[in-house]
Image (tube, rainbow, N blue to C red; front, side, top):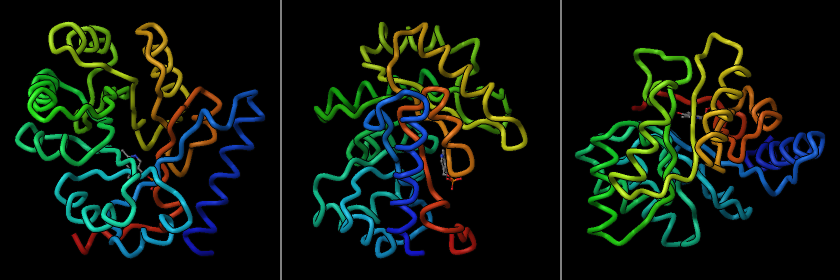
Length: 224
Ligand SMILES: *Cc1c(COP(=O)(O)O)cnc(C)c1O
């Protein structure tokens, strides 16, 4: 199967699962995760009409997407990896959605860059639902206060939440926890679910599923 065949299969699976749950398939966006893959691997997906993509590194995304965007200007690029404050300027220049807002220093830096550049990417707060020490994201019990701080202190328009559940656990309690935090904070966007569990995430309310390997194939990290 080609990447385009796998994209179509994933889109069909998303639509089927949404309908099975009584949801409108248009309410679930497929974010195709192209990290580690070169631009030429992405071109067939763009030519097939797909426009929403995710990358986890600022520099890699800028190098890869500058030439692709010259050909396909209506791309929507999501940052799904952690953001360092010294990369905030480039991140605001490059991304349309930042899914990994997770600490006061970053919120402040983002607010400063939005004011400077006049670009307003959509912002999601990443929640470390499994409270894993090595993982990015605010702890669930700190999420409400952090969202309030983003809104009130930094004037940021938080659109939703994102999580990456622990690899060795059932994902459903993590998805349910993220949905509950979003609900009580009046947030509409839920980015949750990856190749292995996106159908489950749709059942639990995902508005964005981030699918990499099920479309692109296995990643080879040895090439850096
Ligand atoms: C790599 C990555 C994905 C995609 O993972 P797959 O299992 O390949 O679908 C989704 N979300 C985040 C945050 C990632 O880093």
